[in-house]
Amino acid sequence: MTQNEAENFPLVASASMQPAGRAKRGASRRLYMQERNDVGQMTCCTYVLWFFSVLFISLTFPLTIWFCLKTIAEYERAILFRLGRLLPGGPKGPGLFFIVPCIDELEVVDLRTFSFDVPPQEILSKDSVTVTVDAVVYFRVQDPTMAVINVENYKRSTELLAATTLRNVLGTKTLAETLSHREEISNTLQSLLDEATDPWGVKVERVEIKDVRLPRQMQRAMAAEAEASREARAKVIAAEGEQNASRALKEAADIISESPNALQLRYLQTLNSISAEKNSTIIFPLPINLLTAALNEK
Image (tube, rainbow, N blue to C red; front, side):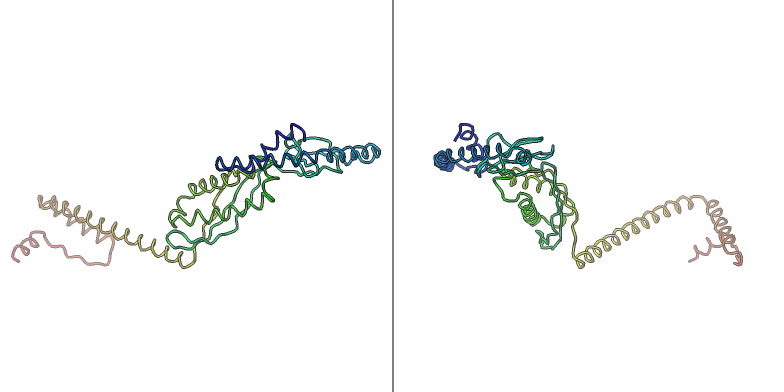
């Protein structure tokens, strides 16, 4: 085992294991030392196989050269394994590089941002209301080595984790909070997913709640509640309008009562309005004095 491999192995092991305490770190260290001794016994076999593979490629040079050159695009990285062991030096690419096809195995990882739709989840909210919620998640591979070594299928694992986290988070929210605090819930989901997928080398960039669907009965109940609330507000507004109109009429009557001539003019204006609207109406005007005397007698 070379010195570079010995220095690279504990870094990968520590990134994948992430010990929680001093005792666990000590156990991981002892496990690493044991694995290092086992690998040292296989070093000679590895070099022998590598020598015969290079010899075979040299003897069949015109034909095998096309199997030894690999091209990786700008948005991709290649993880190279030799006899099942991760080669030091980190991911390969982009560009052209050389491999030994007999003993080397290649895993290509795409670094672009992926997106997937979380299937609609039926969630029971905190106030015992069943809602159906779906979301969309955007993520990318941040560490290709960890994405290949630490998880079997990082895409599928991220999708399952997103669905579970969505159910767990929305289960602690009421219906009103789910409908009105979407941005806050999206940020919470993004932080939880990003923390959970960090050991996989995956970076969750954004989480958006697409739609919140309610049952038909709940929709009708909410519509009836909103309609009743609007009718109540309309009645209050109408009552306030009548109150204001009555107060204005009282003030106008007080002003008119101070001047008998103003009352006479208002009387004539009312007769003019009636004659303009209803031409077939017969009007018998009476003097205001007679009406006043009749009211006083009563």
